[in-house]
Image (cartoon, rainbow, N blue to C red; front, top):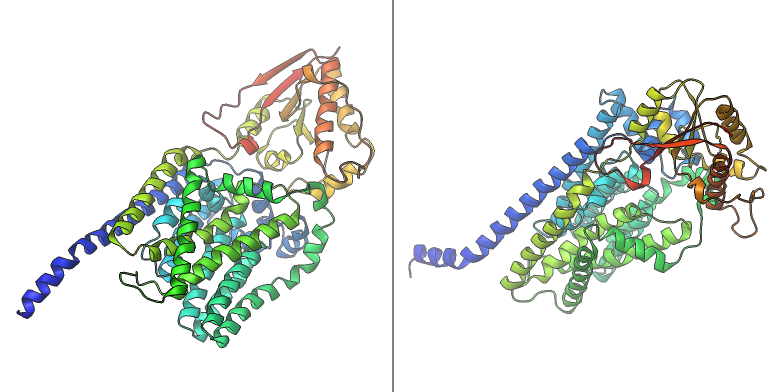
Length: 551
């Protein structure tokens, strides 16, 4: 048989595999472009900054870097992102909403690049499941593109995992130094990344020890140690935060944590949570198979070490992250879990690729990724294009309509962080309770107010004075319906015997006190339309009620 004929036969035999490879790349590119579209949708539709984003923007706008560091004890993040936003504005990127949204888009696109990098490093040719599960997740898109440390922190921790594995697979001082630099930067974005990094380093150490490569295992430990040491300057900051965060702490349990985690992985409904479980099982099977045999007929060119590393990352990082969340005693929100999902997705992707040893399984992998993406895209677009707040609309409305002698009352107090950024009107405004500094979330001031007897008495007096003089009261935020409110018993100064320093009972009671006063004396109340015109983030969708008259 001639050499040319042998090449033709080989080419004919490879054609089906080549077609499947091209189909996979085509789907991956389409999913990536769809994810880019989601980020652009967020850029153009998110609108004004909501209170958590305002918090970061206000840190960036502080008078000096020294002031930023002095106020870190009132925030839950290191300063890196605030400093970068500050530099972005100074370089001409802008500190207004549109300029900051572009900053968020840049971070979002970098995150997609990090997913590609991580999957390729773990010997998975395309991030099919990563793009479908996390790249198109509306919760992830909003978390990454928001002006918060989550986005850049996720980019850096995913890149750290990618580069650390490359260093373990083919050790070199240059790669370990690069991984160390990324690891340090990642924890300088978010303290939470320290626990994810712990899981990644545990996985890397496991693989290295199994290979009896103690030198590489030591290098992995050094990467983690460097990141941990970089957090030592924040010991006093973290300790100081313990004095105020008791007001938002409440007993939590594993069931509560897992229920919110399930919510985080199922933005498109319960069905979209199933692929995570399926992929976890497939990844576990791939790990077991790789431990039994380093090679088998038809096995993908994913080295057994990469499969073991991926499986270990899934287990160790999940455990470390959930333990860390439980230790905070905070009520978690779905976006808290996105950094964890950001590293789980490439790890599961790598496990699924390694498990696909036959043409049937490879086709099934491709079909499943398309199905997941379709489920995410249908429901995800509406969530991605949701307005992040209507506080700017409310502030503009009240600013135009409220007279100088009127009074604006914002409840709960944390809505005042956003309202302050956008309100330009002549009328005075207050929060429940009144706080001296509303540039950022000052839970320490809330704690001090809770410790005082009758802290909202000045507000009640101002409300009474305003209405008695014939002027109007503008209620912004959440107030109980006066028709359903009975006279509330004043709470004693905190801490209470039943709930300690937890702030919720106080916030609820203060709102009821205002509503009961209005029930007893107000003649007229009108709910005003805010005119958002489309869905608004439920965490900051502020109603407006104007009340007048006195009896």
